[in-house]
Length: 297
Image (cartoon, rainbow, N blue to C red; front, side, top):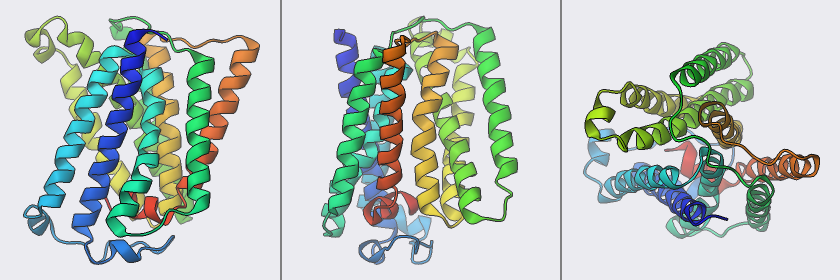
């Protein structure tokens, strides 16, 4: 593995930790009474402090700071490595959230949650080893961006239309999948901004990338919040953390021409690793600690 890729992995893991810490801290501040008594499938927004009260909570503000640190670390990771490498590693935020939430709520981590975490770790390591993501091009073409953003827009709209389904699980899945898709685009835009920054601040300020970045960030937050409000946090968590890495891999390939090994044996290992990772995510999404952390965020 190249030195730049090693740094990208370390920075991506640090970003995942920061994001997880931010989620745990904000949840703890917003739901000071309910956070220790949250059970699977029973989460509501009742008992949350109003925003004006949370702004006076040092713990909540610390969570915001950690979110900012997470973005900064992700940005640096994408400067060193590919979206295909960094995107899937952000799933480890679920793993970091387990011990952090356990400490904050003074609750034990279940054995099956630990097993699911091991499955995610092993699967991610296997994917990186099998895929060996390439760096791709530094400067994406406008045509590639236009085609990718147009396709992502159509996919998001289709998911939101499908989210009109009466079944809460289907609605939460579709909205969360849309949020995960936007997150993948967000990662690509972050990398694009980093590459544009090499040409100077003036070049970045005059580019369309910061505007698209801001829109994708707002849309991601809105869709993720809505997915959890629908009432099926397990479905929302599974769809969100399953879609985001797949979207990142797709954006990396389409926009930055990032590649992975595509021999028959390598592809079989990559697909198997991704399947194992998604299975681990689905299991972790049922953890009361994980649900309490992300569904109340």
